[in-house]
Image (tube, rainbow, N blue to C red; front, top):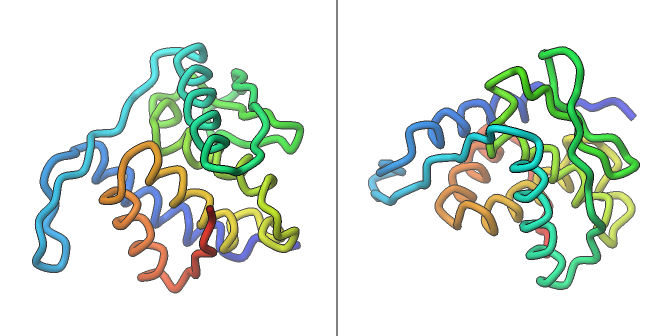
Length: 163
């Protein structure tokens, strides 16, 4: 199936990631709230520990999510998720060693555990976006999730409710 939302999802998440790079107070349609500064990881071990922690936490919320393995990816152009439960990160590329990128790849893993088999039909479809917002809320809080969800909706991208 064609991934029709990919470029729009990347654009939304890139803009959202830049907000998390700064962190702090955000003016959101006249309301002010704080968003955290995203973490930057120094190595694969730190990424693995982060992934293990949040997937355990997500599983405690009732989702049956298996473990994922974080591995080094050659090249520096992209990170990706392999359906066997592997996340490949080009650790030499500083853009790839951020919380936003790791959560993006983990959302691909989480969506495979959703009970609706149609939720994962498109790699960056509504099921993926719902999983991403759910993970972001767990890891970064409701304010960061609100900004991301609103970004998706502003780009005309629906979000499937997850969990």
